[in-house]
Image (cartoon, rainbow over all chains, first blue to last red; front, side, top):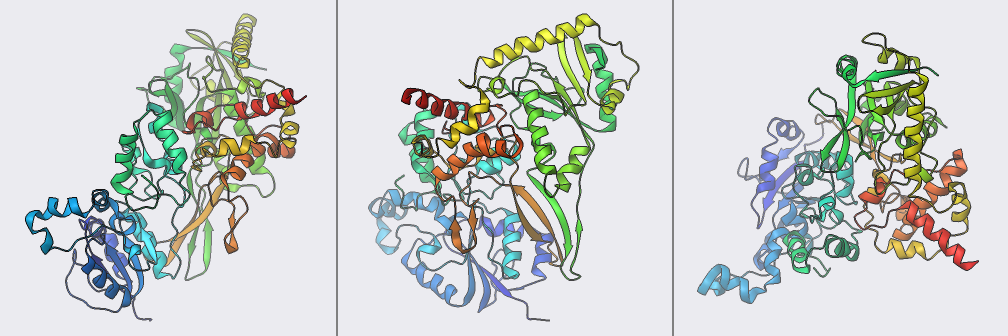
Length: 248
Length: 348
């Protein structure tokens, strides 16, 4: 039998909530792990070293020295998978980018700010090439399983390129805009089964912009039709979508 | 045609009996001024005067996600998967029934869709005469106010306490008489039902196309290059809401997923739609409807011309669900067709 592929998990700035989601797969996780050899996986076990067939990397890059470590992981991994919103789109770490280092460094580190080198938060793909992305805050466990299986089969993982509205329609949800509420489902990449709306909340955009997101139309819907203020819309969009070339 | 009179108090035992035999779905109010079909229980209050169900009933024969095949990758074998529970949809409005009839015709044509057909065969439909017209509806002008086929029973509320029930199939009649014989409807009751239908049709015709619906295919053929498409599509979010809520849209995507043991797996289908950006994406990264304008125009041609060219009726029944579902407010077949029509009147 062929040698089992070796996988590993690494993390940068983030809450490790995505690795926790994976650990929470429990028995199903053991079935998957039967097909692989585990290197580094801090949430489950310690130790292990490269090279790796698949490296799952969680968290954003927030310090210049993160770059070296990420590049080293990249160098010894055949496939690098960004895991969770912080790694795929920068996520909530990027909220600080709108303040600028002159504000956020003293805010966090006080008069010792110059001891710590930090810079604007960014997703992995801003530093190294990324082969696959598992979006979400936190990730969807079923999607993690599916993507992992597809990678083990040598397939390019499938990723929805349509907005969350599709999954709301499949779930039969009543649209948030029926009540003039804000919801970023109209521009956010699907794949979460519209879970937040299904549970009665709204979409915050944690899976990043859908590739064809029409931002002008979205502003028209949120500001002109739902009647929400420019600032309220901006706050919502800056929560997860901060790392983008689009003006938010 | 046989018709019976059913009184409100006879309904409880009948519903209980039907739900012993199959899954029964009825329209109820789900939020203020919003209605949808839900599984019946004695605690549910049926909204006899609902205007439109929030979700189309197509999900009962064409679920958002459905398994098609189970396969064993090692043995190279595959088994078809058919799930078709017995179900009764009680309270279907004529425009929705017309949509089901159209789906039946399309799914049966060519290579019949086995999964759809099996679910459909196991489904009993009790149609219901609407008592109100939704603000976004325009079925009165689309030839969808009246439908002669596709129902097992057709219910018309003729007084606060009584229904005139027309029999459409032996299966429907058997279910209606499941708790004992019922009186056949009198001529007066038949007349009351006719008056009720006429009243609501007149109300429905008040909002709709400004020209006979049969003209739509020709109207569209003249308007491929209209500026309207670009004007409207600028606001298109490409979210697919309009086609996913449409009772006559039936496009799907087929995908596969392995089991965790990596030995077998499942092939399934999921709803897809021509308004989604990668719907027309093919090998080599070519997309023959890559722009929102092309997708937007395609939908109106599909509803107003292509389906007509195929089966002689419009692909839009005028339920108005897309009007409501479109957050940008650009999905509205009635408004689009009327706008094209009016522009031509000014030209001539």
